[in-house]
Image (cartoon, rainbow, N blue to C red; front, side, top):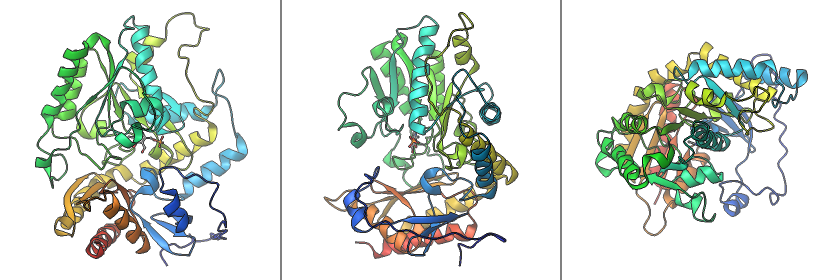
Length: 450
Ligand SMILES: Cc1ncc(COP(=O)(O)O)c(C=O)c1O
């Protein structure tokens, strides 16, 4: 059995399967399909989930891109258990507790030099809203209050709150929700057909960053507060930045006094073989948003790392005054902070970021071995992320990939799909054999699909 108790550990797998699934309105889920044929996880350990019907499922997605160190890791579990019995909650508005400061320093050690100020949130979506608000308030604090325009990118995913869906570029996440934020514009996405089957960064597309000059010419640089992009777009189907593209965005934003925000909710914490994508691509933005891997997904937590220049612009005026009117009840809450510290310890002690970098070539070869698999029209990879794009079924977009997801689950492998793209992002503890199993299962599944 793959999913085994650790030595000396009693495995508590008493499964209570609910007999009524109606009340839980599930997020980003085909609710009726799910409830007709539920897929429930009741336990997890390292690389595997355990299902309600007693099967082991290999996790090819780190849960939802969060569990970079694998599941139920003892150090993190123990830290949370200890913390919940020691200091359950403490306000961080006008009060503090040591762990929030410790975690902030630890995160600042991992972010690029100069991005040393950490604002805690509870999720990726909240990190995005926080970064956008800081950008607007920063310009106002410096007497450039006309800079209110925000620039996102087509196919960008920045969570589901109003700021995030406004700068985001995924039509289904936008079209049902009214006018969204005004004063938002979008860069073109970077997905070009000539880059098909590229390994790691594609050759073509750096010129797409020049579109920012067009938007600047259209709106006036003095009206633009910030540009936000995912350095590697995950949720929209694993789009890898073309060579030179991010560098060019950095040059143009710097030239015009526009802040550059990297949304690293997926790419943070080792996913690309470095702490952040900023390091991987050698481009330092003004702010980084993060979440997910910050606590290994164990307790919800996000954060924004901001530059000294941004932070210091707020530190003026009477000292008894609040400098930034923003924060969440749970910003830096003790249990999440404890989980975060134990998570960063686990990453460091096990050298997981380096491990991801070492495994990346094996991962790349394994993924690209699917280039002749049935229905596959493109394969993209970077670090321990992979995207496999399928030819859609005529008139039934997304169906083929969704069928692949269901069939893979039946065969004991968890993958994720978006549109007709399979996205994989296994925990950084994945073995070579498990990579083979993931990829082999995808091949088998595709062979059986219409
Ligand atoms: C790049 C990016 N930003 C923001 C988010 C939103 O994070 P959350 O679901 O924690 O709000 C995600 C989630 O996948 C993401 O990938």
